[in-house]
Length: 430
Image (cartoon, rainbow, N blue to C red; front, side):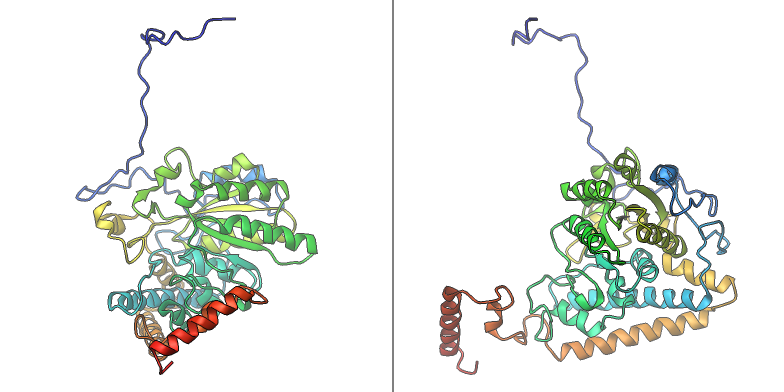
């Protein structure tokens, strides 16, 4: 048996030293921005495989970029979903409403009406377009930047604001962080602050749907940073092995809180390319092109419904603002990045497309923006009647003991009674 190293430090002393690679973004605060390194492919140049194809046929599309809208605002190629003007206008309205909602809730947080908020500015297409492409009863397992799904599915804005304010009208009774909604009636699974946990849940739900012989599929969303979590890879394994009818949406907005996508593996290859290793279909899509996002989701949904299995879609987009109201992006990235992003703004692109085909104009866009702002303003005033942060208008104290056990254990009954007695002593008005 060969002798091992002697431990004297001499073995291999003539070998080159190892170096650890630490990913570093191309631009930091104060840097000039140049996105010329990004491969932005020609719209309409990407082939559209049959939805029943072998997963391997999509491998080239996992490193390409599916695009429909060109610089002239016209739609091109086989991925054009050929939506009628009314549907396009409805999509534009939902994205505009989502942005108006974000703007007012952001101001509400700055005014102290809630503790926390997360905007999806620049990413509206990655939630609104898929919500329109899916069936209304397909189960969605979102992350915390998919408010556009609920808005598209018609969930009342007042209920969303009640939840954000954690007031007495909050159907979740103040037990979730703001923006972590839940609505069984809208097939919208409860949002979790723990990253990537929703992905195995979505796959498990899809497997259960298949076991029951149901027709509903599942879709889940997470950021590119969350693909570094083990839960995401467990979900991919189960989805591949059991051919689960699920869509795994990776919203690559370039930044995970203050760390850029390289820390999740984005320097090596695309996030859609992870589908190749798992043997599932993979698509990389221009996430700021609402038509491309709709078409990719429709393709994946049809494939899942036909028992073709899972699809991983990477939505290549950009987080225009901070990670949340607690974040200052100017501390870690160049202020020019948003304005220099080569794929533009999804709302502007859809608006310009509708104008180009003679189905919209700037005056109607201005009227729509005003209508959306007024709609959100009215909903906000209605929700504020139920209270805002710190104003004491919240659910009755005893509700903290509800909704966990079907039958409350005796020791919790005693604690609840004691807590209520003590509260009445301190606050007789209760």
